[in-house]
Amino acid sequence: MTDGRTSDYTTEDAFALDANAVAGQLYEIFGSEMTAVASRCAHCGNRAQVGSLRAYCVGGPGVVLRCSVCAQIVMRFMRRPDGSFLVDARGAAYLRM
Image 1 (cartoon, one colour):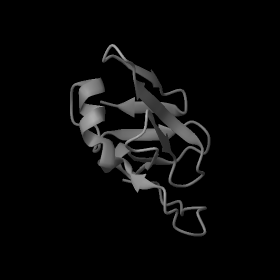
Image 2 (cartoon, rainbow, N blue to C red):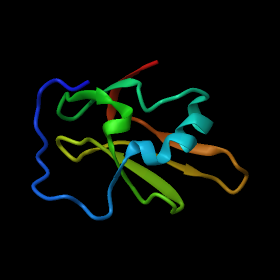
Image 3 (cartoon, rainbow, N blue to C red):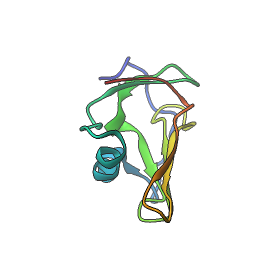
Image 4 (cartoon, rainbow, N blue to C red):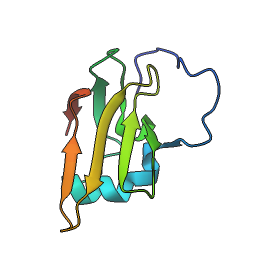
């Protein structure tokens, strides 16, 4: 589900995966399947499924999810030592759940 915009990414980034790579962590945080959830980038207005966001730092201490059109940060999260998560989703205008 996209609004017809094309990506501003001129080349593929070897360090990026799509957000489906962190589907399990998103499920842990939100308690439901998130990759098919509709979202909107607060920066450029792109509407797309969460699974289409570009994921960085997968396997590291935190994950950054960037818009596939404008490359701005939509969401970031990290697991704390006590097992809880810190989540910053201010780059998402909405997540339709």
